[in-house]
Figure 1 (cartoon, rainbow, N blue to C red):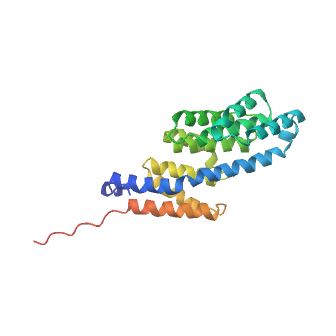
Figure 2 (tube, rainbow, N blue to C red):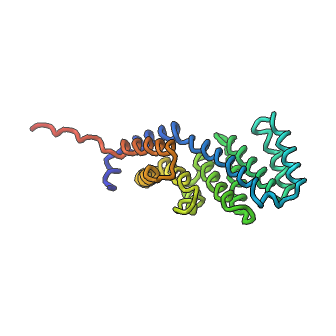
Figure 3 (spheres, rainbow, N blue to C red):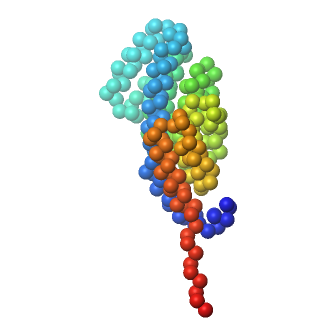
Length: 233
C-alpha cells in the first residue's frame, strides 16, 4: 500500500484534501455547537445545577439578558467575568460559552484560537464538572486546533479517549480525527476512520454523507495515475 504514495504527487493530495476540508470540514463545527446547546439544557435540568444557589441562577439569567444585543466579541468579557466570580455550574456554562465565542473569532486570529483552546482545556481538566461537559470541551479544543492548523499530536491527545466505543461523542471525535489526518497528509488513516464512520449505526445521515464525500475525495487522491503507454519500438 505504501507504494501508492510513490505514484501520487503530494501536491495533488494536498489540493484534493484541502478542497474537501474547505467545502465540508467546517460543518462539523456547527454540529458541535448544536450539541453544546443540548448538553447545556441537559445539565440545567440535573442536580448538578439544581444544587447551586437560586441567586446564581438569577445572576446568570440577568447576564444573558445583557448579552442579547452584543456581538460575539463583546460578549466574551462579561461571560469571563461572570465565570471567574461564580464557582458553580452557571459559572461553568458561562466559561464554555465564552470559549465558544473565542472559537467563533479564531479564524485567522491566533490570539482567539489560543484563548479558546486554553478555556476548553481548563474545562476538560475540571474534575468537578460532569464527564459529558468535559468530553465536549476536549472535542471543541480539538476542533479549534484543527481549524487553526494546530499539531496533529495535540489533536490526538484530546481525542484519544473520545474515540472509545462507549463514548457518546465517538462519531464526532472520529470525524474530527479523520479530518485532522487528511490535512496532515495521512490519507490512509483518514480513510479507515471515514469507513468506520459510514458503518456506524449511531451516525446521522448528514455525517454519513459527509464521510462518503470525504472518502471519495481520498480515493481519488490515492488512485495512481494511469501508466503512460510504452513507446513502440
